[in-house]
Length: 321
Image (cartoon, rainbow, N blue to C red; front, top):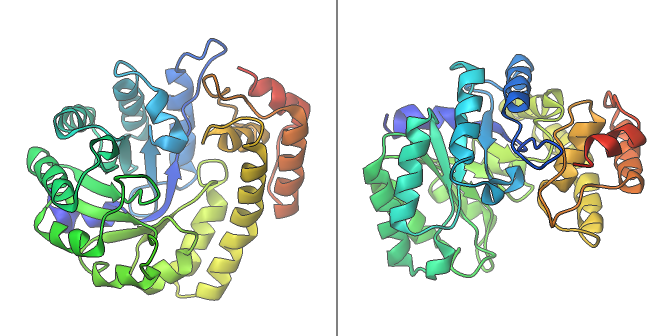
């Protein structure tokens, strides 16, 4: 597939799905299969959303090389061609990233989210070589994850523009680095599918963007699909207000809870449990949300008017690991 075929797959609210673990912190593949069927049935389908597996918020960096490919394959099989399934790849050198990309392609992914190889401390020319060689090696799509807040993760806009010659690069996961205006994305939004990663879903769409990152699509698809429909209808103020009404309170809680324990999936897993979709705890040293923290999340979700299905005590048991 080439970029004109791949770009329409990188659209809508990106559901960065959690990895379910059992009580021994082993991947629960059966649970992932069931969850995927539910996500598809509730609208996270090709052309409206993306199901992103083994990304950072999905605990991909914590998964072994004998785990993530089969987790990905489980999602692909359960979605049965109805969803755009993308796999996260993290911070490896060119050779190992290409090896992982080929495995993901063999497992049925339509695309990859790929971070810069930050531990190589790459120059801008190194980044072009890295993504160029990856593009040449595979036939599926690439979403470049601009991790500019990490040493070695910044990609200059001019460098992004040079990626136009890399046919498999279909999307850019965008937030503006220091000294760069967010609107600079308009320089490349006609080339790639730009996915907002900075909380500006409406501004991104106005500038030609085609999707946004969120905390909630897998827990309550109806919310984010409504945001997306408003964006597609050009109702930008209403869309951003709806997005902010959920995203901002949850971000505040996430920052608060990080003081007790880190881990990008902790809040996401707590929300899932409270919505009646438990996925177990994160692997240590990350700790599950405790009952007090879950009470706070539950109050916030109830304030949204969401159909919270579990008491905090039951959710705590469901996330205890």
